[in-house]
Amino acid sequence: MVDLRILVLASGNGSNFEAIHKACEEGRIKGRVVGILTNYAYAGVITKAIAYNIPCGFVSGVHESPVHTLAATRSFIPNLIALAGYNRIVPPATVDHFHGVLWEGVPGIINIHPADTQEYQGLYGHEFALGLLPGTKRLTETKITVHFVDHGVDTGPIIAQEVVPIDEDDTLDTLRCKGLKVEHELYPRCIEAYRTMFGKEV
Image 1 (cartoon, rainbow, N blue to C red):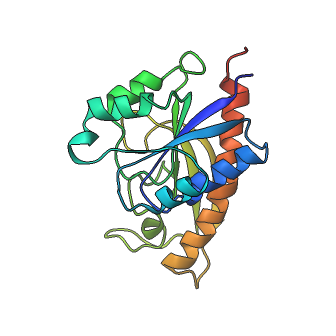
Image 2 (image 1 turned 90 degrees about the vertical axis):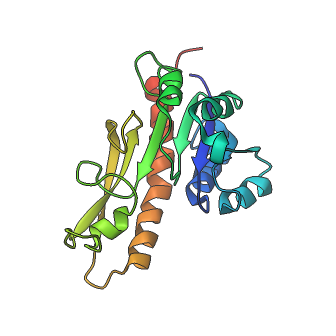
């Protein structure tokens, strides 16, 4: 099976990037992270990427146009793009370009979302679960979701989900910590499963 060349798109501290990179280093994912692409010049993921000697790219402002985003992603020659806290919508041209890279008919971009995408899409997934958004009520559990990326916002087919119980004393900070612990285990497993299920024979 082909080794993965993973491009991670991130806007924050990069904890999921680090989990993916470590899984590659430890052989839990057969492949490597070939680059980081971020839209935020002060993102913590940049510091982590430098520490691991992984190239970084930057798209922001005028350079976040569909043409620039596609060019930036293609420059790393990835065969899988993993969104990890990326707070921008991937342009349709980029989604379409990477569709079928590893297997005909299979999307080439995946995302991890801190909620059940069948119930809530977009930012503030933990706030939704805690009933902190207008018109919402506190749940007893939430789900971390790994899904394919399509032209919508968190609307692509679900790859895997894992339940995160919400305790009575959970706050936004404690739920985020619980969710991230699940994400750091689930995302690498899904990425390797993607490779073995959809990777081309070479």
